[in-house]
Amino acid sequence: MFKHLLVAIDGSHHSLKAAEKAVAMALQFGSRLTLIHVARRFHLPDSLKAYLRDEHIEGEPLYDIDAATRKVIDDVRREALDAGLHAIDVVFKEGRPARSIADYAGAHHVDAIVVGSRGLAEPETFLLGSVSHKVANLAGCTVIIVR
Image (cartoon, rainbow, N blue to C red):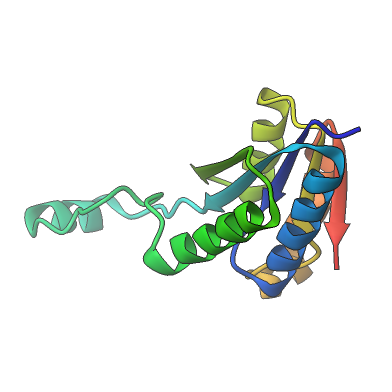
């Protein structure tokens, strides 16, 4: 039924529950599973960019994932492997989470997206709507929201 599942992981409790559900579904349907994390782009003033450049503080691009996030995703991947899944991809994107998730799903023939009902940016959701709600509206495939 689902040949390719995409699960969005931001490190929140709900995204980890979504990952558990996605792993179970992938095992049940023999699906390929892709784990995706989308880092928001931070717009810095030109003066701050110049200061960082002058002080040699540029470092890695902003979408380079911090160690804590990478550990969460590595843990999910390891659990999926331990459960018996072998077709697992990991994708890191930079941008607006809902749009990036939906765009990736469309471009890679994803059959279903699995997301947590709430993520790390909960206070924002009262004003702007949740990422899961936006994904459900933007995606051209089935979206499963896990509580």
